[in-house]
Image 1 (cartoon, helix red, strand yellow):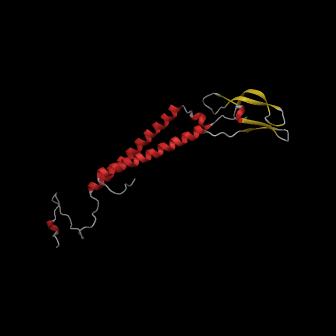
Image 2: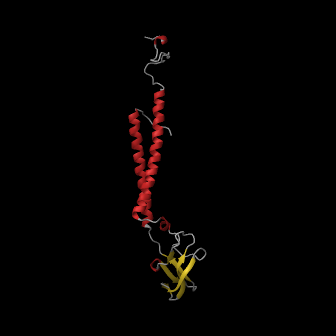
Image 3: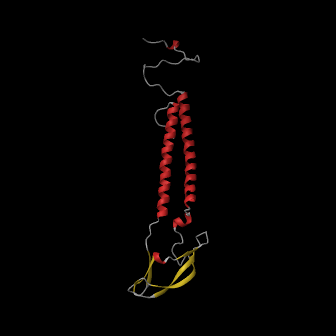
Length: 185
């Protein structure tokens, strides 16, 4: 049974063409497009708010734990004659190889360090050795930087939790708007 297109008037009094097949999926209406736009705007707002809140949590966490970002990188940790200014030198004995003494800079300033603090040679972190050719060399012991690892893990945790919260908030909003499928950014 076919219905006459002229008899199918919309609520606003305009004519609308009859669908070629009954039960076919309908094209999105203006209301659907408006709801999709509202969801995209909501998703962007949620993203920016979570970026801001995540940044505050990260900086607050660093502040609360007392981590100094300048020390985290380890700039100025080792004396470099081309870039550092020696403040105090001392005679030190070799710890490996033939026994001998050599003069080392034990306290220095690093011009790239904006704090202006002096850096000191920590004798437990360095091995002073005399080679077979008679030259005295230093070797810095490798140390695990637990503060750096903790900072990276804290940042990764914030990112993972933020993405989960973002996904849940947007999905909840999508359900409230009655939309299905994914949004296009």
